[in-house]
Length: 190
Image: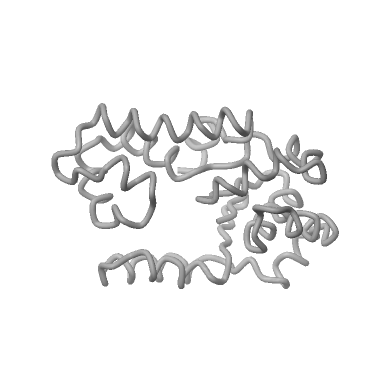
């Protein structure tokens, strides 16, 4: 997902299908589809509007560990300096740091990537653990980190969930220093 200061939210055209596969509950699927349908699609037309560097997109798409969708998201972020990328693909982020071809792009993305674990932690701090837990439990099996954090269901303890989520964020901080957005960026978006 791609967000910028103009309040544009764009997503890959395939996001709705990915969410449907991961969300077993019909009501959650409907809410997800409704949200995704309200977003701009990060297709070739929108990418051209952003003025992305297609050579850069090809470079990213040819990097082992970066799939074509992530290459589109990252290319859009590189073309729109106020944009933030929300991704669940941590393998992609570490691939950026491991490839000599893409490492020059990393400074342009630093502080502009959000991962789901950061958002859940932020929600716990602002909304409260019990409310977040009730909402997350409907989709606990959609994501490995969420399943690890909230897998004990209603018995999930706040301290354990926070510790697990922080360990996932810390893992990205270690392998991809400075790539994650700060809480200030997150506060500005939510």
